[in-house]
Image (cartoon, rainbow, N blue to C red; front, side):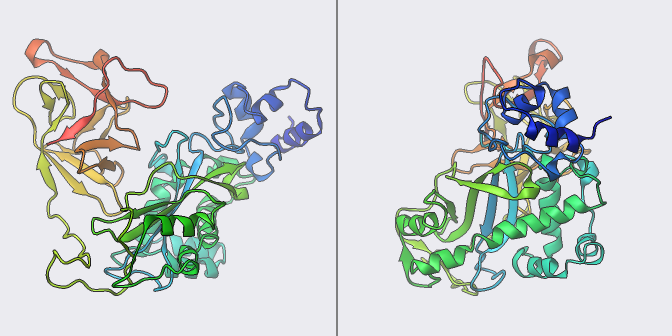
Amino acid sequence: MLSTKFLISLSLLLPSTLSSPIFSIFSGFGASEPEQDIFLNGGAGDSCPIDIPLTCSNSTPIYNSCCFESPGGIFLQTQFWDYYPPIGPNDSFTLHGLWPDNCDGSYEQFCDDELNLKPREIKSILVDQFKDDELYKKMVLNWKNFNGDDENLWIHEFNKHGTCIKTLRPTCYYPYVKNQNIYDFYKISMNIYEKLPTFKFLEQAGIVPSETKTYTKKEINDALSSNFDDLQVYFKCNRYQVLQEIWYYHYLKGSIKQEEFQPISSLLNSNCPEEGIKFLPKGWKPTPNPGNPGGSPPSKPIGGDRGYIKLPNHAGCIISNGQWYQYGTCATFTIVKSQFGGYNLKSSKGYCGFDKEGQLSCGSFYQPSKFQFQYDKETTEISYGGLSKWCFNNENSHGHGKFQQIPIKLIGKGDTCDDPFSLKFT
């Protein structure tokens, strides 16, 4: 049997005019999934063709490929500026993560439980197994958790995002060394972070931390854009107009192991005001008055917000099992902010997640660490994975008349729905 590496090498020698399955795959024109498994799995990520297209640029989806990241074709390198309490060096934004988003802006999360890291594994993998003490020291310095438990954040980032990077799967190594994908995730995340020194970009433009000075959105945008191929970078302010987050968007060419990231403009617009943006120094302390203009951080809610989940223009509401019910009493849900961003949704039956059919469901068997929703307090909309439109799954409804319950599902890209709706928390 011919090896995968031989087939790939052979494909590079064949005339480009040949209409072989290999060339239809590499150029992004619809080869079947079995063909893609044969030619692109089993270590191809270590030697991908030079003419692989950028992610999100092909006309036909490519699945199960070790040389083409899909569906997560957009990579966000995210950095935080935590000024109160102060986290990380005073002259550096901290690394938060490397996130694979889908081409439409939605994203997967917690994709493969079999790949999940367990507590107290990371130092042993990086330092003892792969002998990279330098990488570990860089992570300790720059990849910080606000509560001091940095490893908890590292584990969360790999389990939530790293397990969704298809070109990092163990099957994409030839041969596979145990934990190589884990080591590569942290090494690549740190490498791209170091190539984007946000504090330096701002400082070069005269934007430095200050308790009194403020900056305009244009000033910050220009400082970041001029260091990112003149493309728009997403930056986020908290409720006190203080700069806190920076997201750099990229496409990817080939396997992520090759680290060929291509900058692109942000898919989101900054929520910061046009002027009056604060960039507070780390170590700044608020005055006792929470209403002062210096920007006291919000108090953390205890127990979360409680309310009902309703559908605009529809009678009834979502009941405790996660299904829609037109009659009777609405169930009370609690929305709790999770540790690393996002929200957990909970009813009297337990935390909410999605069953095997992708239907919203709530029960004691769902882990809050795995199912993280988004909640927009201004619009009161509940979304998940960047998707905010839902649809009835009528074929799985049960009961009749006023006792009928209907499951609901998220509407993904390409899905059709005769009656799409949003979920509102009231």
